[in-house]
Length: 485
Image (cartoon, rainbow, N blue to C red; front, side, top):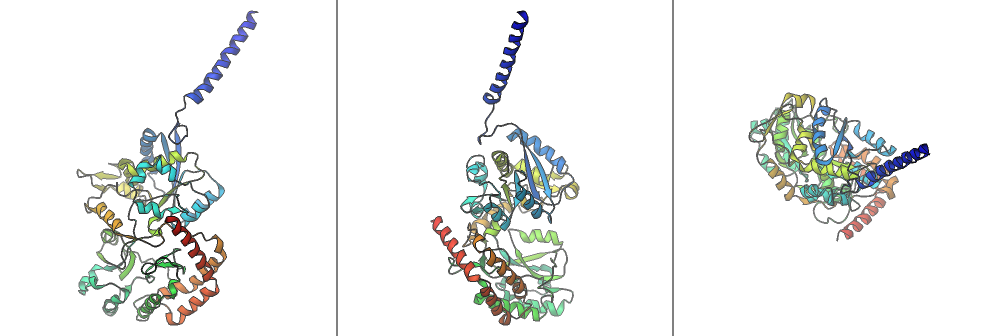
């Protein structure tokens, strides 16, 4: 009898322990605002850039901070520049779990349309409230795909402004007045002088001629909306009068020897630190000449080729997206919110550890130490909000104010926020891409006579189905435009 009573007591106690454990698991669980248990979570974050020696050391400090702030740690993995896109596509296709990944441009749009990323609208309204308030509204508008936001753009220059950039030493040597340069044609007198008097200098560092259109696809595809005039109808920019006149000017320059003879096929990137050019084209930002001068180690100076304009490509150049495979998108958004609004965390991730990777001065400006350059040099543009980064000791004090003014001065492009779904015309686009690759590089670098080759280009585009694609673009654009209203 004693043994039976003892056995019953043991069973009762055991059952009580089990029930207590179950009760503890349900009743004591602290719920986060997103509905996930607030137990510690490791965020897997993949981004672009050469892996750095001190990443683990820096993220030990990051994780001390994020553990305290949001009860999460971060596993930060960089994938080298040339491998990033391919490796991320393999991960996405295989369904490998991760939380946050860098993306940009057309890749971002395509992956969003395929369901690879979480739609962030609700998360921004909850876990990302501060982040949403900090971002330039144009960035969020441009990041929308089919009406929803699938990624957090880096908060920096939202606009694009193409410029002509000159070697300042040569400008001053020959007393050129570059303030009068408004068009491609205005370069001619200067190019002639450089060609005649500077045998070691190529007058034009190879660029493709600028045309004032908002392109549906990046690169050389023949679908665009005019930046001026009728901004509501898609056109083939290569049928325009300005395309013909611009390509004729480029061909004139090519024949005069102002452009390298292999311009259409050359892979030369014309690095800024090699002083073998007079003028080049690029996309600017406030104080860009100062940055380019630092990089070149000689002075450069620029003049605008266009007014600042906010394009889809200028706002989707650097995006952090939350993967559809994330086990805790709410926590991932909490981290992105903190990264983009907390100056300590943002600078720690970007610059490394104070006193080891950089030195901070009394005025809160900083100077890089050798350890940052050698062991922790990550790509700033890819990581998030620029406006809470420390200024360097030789930065203009009003740098971030000028960035804000630049963004506010920009006009929106006709298709800002519109992302074309190419699935209905995939076959035609593949054919048209092949035609563009055959003709565009030679025309845009002046390597062939446009009066002969531009009509051939446009006829081949017709034969390859450009009208069908143009009709589909217009249909989707009209639907999108109506939805905006």
